[in-house]
Image (cartoon, rainbow, N blue to C red; front, side):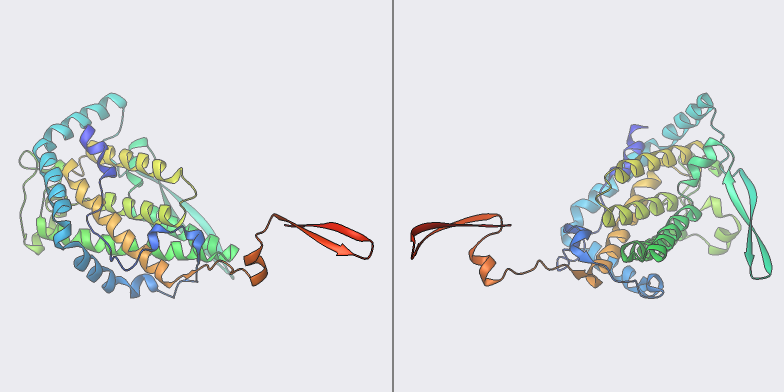
Length: 328
């Protein structure tokens, strides 16, 4: 149990290009531009190519080995971890179904027409914990940044919204591709301890019986990590975001074991994918931003620093004197 709750703190697998050192600098050192229209779609092929190119390098072999070892250890203990968390859920009164929603309707007036939009909201604690990793949640966060950016003419917020959408889409593609290749059973439909793996499953069977094939890796955890990484990279001055995000991801991880949607070993690779793609996306955004240049001092200010006192003797018709000049 301790292993999977610590999973959100695992390091990303990929190393990004050394020529781009933008993430080592604060966003305050950049003037952000408005994101290009549909940049989150246009950049998609390049993001996938960047991940492949920068991950599978000789220097990353130790980190890849670390990821494989961590996953293997968790696979060995998966069934025990799942059973323990399921029992803990019973003691805490957590529902084992995380798909219970309460639907409300939001009325919007568009000209002479009225629209009724259904809104899903969790109706119990377990569902609320599961919603942390829901795609609707993360796209809503992106939409909030976009709305704020447009209202306040804040390019950083708009750029963050675009990067969130891009990171979520690329991460979702990668996790879905791996799910379709690994074919691991989800706990709630498992036919053997730890769930059966059906490598390169029949895709027609996958479509008909998805829970029997789509456990590995966790898309919910990948999406949550991608969202957290983009926000903390663009707003590092808000230091509470990272511990809050890790805490929420831990709750998400617990709930996905409690409702038997995922095994603990589905988490490490999902987290690494989310963080890696988010870093690729943020670096591209910084590469398009304009670095803020410090004003170069004039000849006068170069010789005499600000906040200085300059004392000089002088001789006049009335006799010698002393001149005192202060610069601020």
